[in-house]
Image 1 (tube, one colour):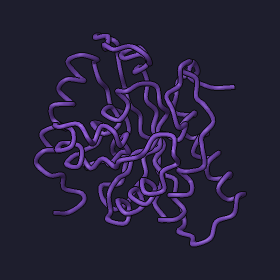
Image 2 (cartoon, rainbow, N blue to C red):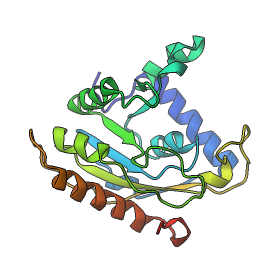
Image 3 (cartoon, rainbow, N blue to C red):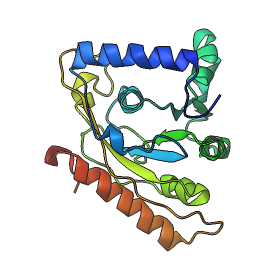
Length: 213
């Protein structure tokens, strides 16, 4: 099956997610047409809530692979479901090299790969400095990076809360792709420059209340 064509489980989950997001959070999508319909692409988004991977993935029709904590892959139902949602296991706090390799393999198969370069959810809602991992993966694979802004999920399902809050509007905004050359060797300066460009492009898509210092 083509990487651009989701499997039946992903497709059903996608439709369910869209329905629930619209029903519960008045979900709106902007700029989805800017995401390439095929070929490798990285979706780099700000991170506010546990909802964010669903919000980012539900905005476009092609399947999106995300990293997920390795321990949830050991739970009975999720051990079956997550691989069918193209999730990549990562050992939390270990700088898991296997997860990075998994992301690179997904991109080399022509997948879309979603990542939150801040590394953790923002507890203030303000955009945090991006880590260089997203730039390293992009340059290693030559994958374009689409900046993505997630808005409202910090109200819909705040960090630390066990339950979501319905009727809080949520939207996702996709920006213009950033072309990235494929390189076998990358300098620290190149990593920093691309990281800061991606961060600035995400910031430009966000309302001012999310801007960091």
